[in-house]
Amino acid sequence: MALETTTIQEKLTSKFGDKVLNFHMSRDIFSFEATPDAIHEVIRTLKVEEDLNFHFLTDLCGVHYPENEVSHQFAVVYHMHNWVENVRLRITTYLSGENPEVNTITDLFLTANWMERETFDFYGINFIGHPQLKRILNMPEMVSHPMRKEFPMEDGGRTDKDDRFFGRTANNG
Amino acid sequence: MSDSKINMVAPPEGVTGEGFFATKLNDVVGLARANSLWPLPFATSCCGIEFMATMASHYDLARFGMERVSFSPRQADMLLVMGTISKKMAPILRQVYEQMSEPRWVIAVGACATSGGVFDTYSVLQGIDKVIPVDVYVPGCPPRPEQIVDGVMQLQELVKNESVRRRNSPEYKELLASYNL
Image (cartoon, rainbow over the protein chains, first blue to last red):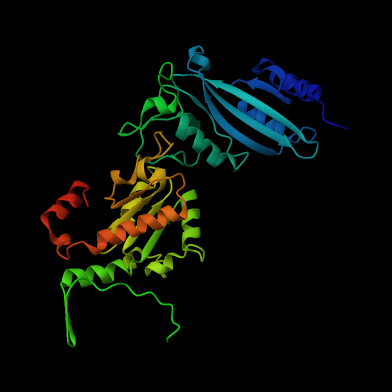
């Protein structure tokens, strides 16, 4: 029998109560939020419970929402996949803008190691318990986290680029 | 050998007489260097594909004395940088350049190597001339093999007319010093 989204929702709500919220369908993927203190346990449950069986972590990434209230300025999004039933899940957890940190899930999925390093590299989100949280794509000397919205996209040392040709003037004038 | 189609490079200017030919050392060295440049391809993206076409039989860069593409910087004269160089890659490019022995020349092939191209962003080096001196820039995104061949021929002109003493000159040392090399 196919795994129904209502079943997933019931199982999670009965175990985690109000720490999992805002269940909805978004672009054909069943999505919900989990609070940062519960996210590790939520993902562990989804993985080990036999009738849930989300044994594959498709993606893990960060988002920056500078306009949200301080407690919701960063998000970490997890995509999980149950290959047997072919059901996908999207789980978001919102983190504080001042001190974004969340527990690592490298103990559940080894693949999360590099994904969390990438998220740390680009957003400066601290994954507590990660075995080797250092930059992965950018140069190690870099001090900023370039995917944060306040970070300027352009290279400071550029000399021959005209903003007009990159769509970066007020009215492209 | 009467039906041979081998093209010979014209001799440099000089004085010819019965059994002798006199010319300048500069010209002879320049001629030899220009017609046996060993290229080191540093290909990171699509311009590298164009270079492969340039090396292949249709365009045949070997016509210019470049049969042997050197993959060791220690045995190469001409560094061809083809493609986007990210800032993380810049120290590696610099190291490759440092490992080349004098005389050495650099061609920046394509928009990215020349100026960063469309990648006006924090992670991309805005032209390799920010880290190493460049002799010839080939425009294009990517340039056609004809353009790469033209760039190489431009470089050959430079090499032919370069003084053998140039690499010892204070101007050249100053140039290297400006790059902290």
